[in-house]
Image (cartoon, rainbow, N blue to C red; front, side, top):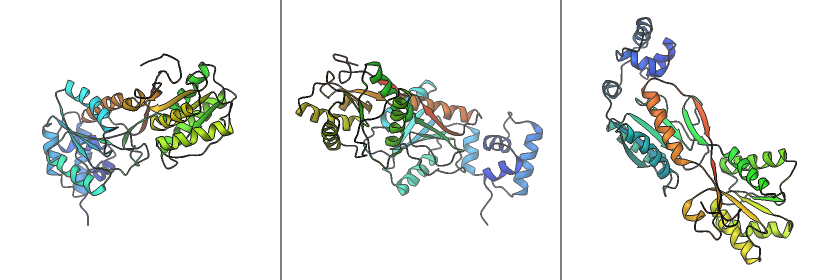
Length: 335
């Protein structure tokens, strides 16, 4: 028979995981009646406390783990910077580990971080699709950033890609653009679909529809070049193109230049991610919707602090993005 878990004790006593932990560790925040109920549940289930959990409850180490999955740090580094801003204010240090989207490596890093007696953990994914939860038996609070946990009772933070799509359209409409096409991203990514949903909703509210074609493609400049040519061939009256990423936009702009199109005079271009090395290196520079990764990192850190203080958060929280206007939509504009 498997040993009883803290989660099972909490469920038996009818309290939160945090409250059960505090009761078993003699913390003052728990009332006498609640403590007795938790202790009775632990005795009934023959619960044996994890010694690491006891040591963490007794004293914080002043360190937090950040477990990333993207190889190039495109998402994890700005999230780490935001988290470090928040943790640094409280004099806490961050350990960064890259699992490289390998479940075995992730488990190894997780064990190594717990062995260092971290006080909390932020798990950063490489895409906004749900990822497997690390489970409820960890002795520290866990916050999932960018890629949400597939367990709705976990704490997850993601950028609001649906609103980001709407934001791109609202910007173009404010410029008087009405014949708008969209170059989609990879069909297997939730971000591509969410951005497309926001784009269509905003256009629908304005009584407009996307110009054809509607094909999903890849997160690449090559796809952007091919798709832009196809759009011009099928919808020569297009006056704006929304690209699902900065990489796609760079390719689309190459094709528009080769076809003698003036940007933004003839066609305005808006993209997503605001990956600075691409957005500012483009000619003209890209107007792009920024995912606010540093703000996401700061909030993830705050959620760790909140959990350590006994506050509970569940489900997926979508954070607002921001539009950075540059020359691809407004002539002469720079960030």
